[in-house]
Length: 68
Image 1 (cartoon, rainbow, N blue to C red):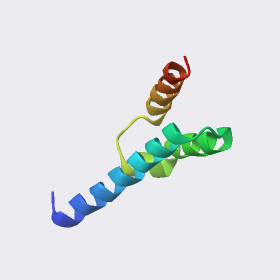
Image 2 (tube, rainbow, N blue to C red):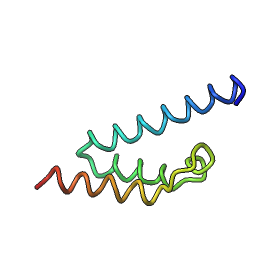
Image 3 (cartoon, rainbow, N blue to C red):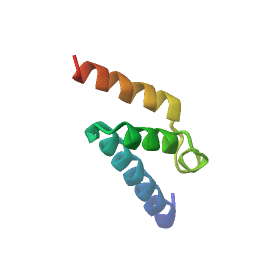
Image 4 (spheres, rainbow, N blue to C red):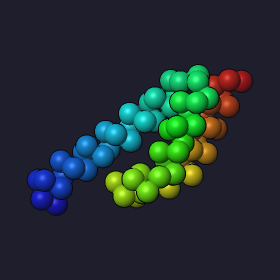
C-alpha cells in the first residue's frame, strides 16, 4: 500500500473510531441516531469495509449490557 493510501486509511479509521466513541459516550438519542445514520451512509461504506448495520447492532447490545 502506498504511503498516501495508508494515510487516508488511517484518517478513515480515526473517523470511524471517533464515531464509535461518541456513540458509546452519548446518552442523547438524537446524537445516537445521527451516528447510526452515518454508519448507514454511502460515505461510511466508501471509507471502510465494515457492515454498518452489524456495527449498530453490536453497539446497541453493548448499551443494553451496560444498562443492566
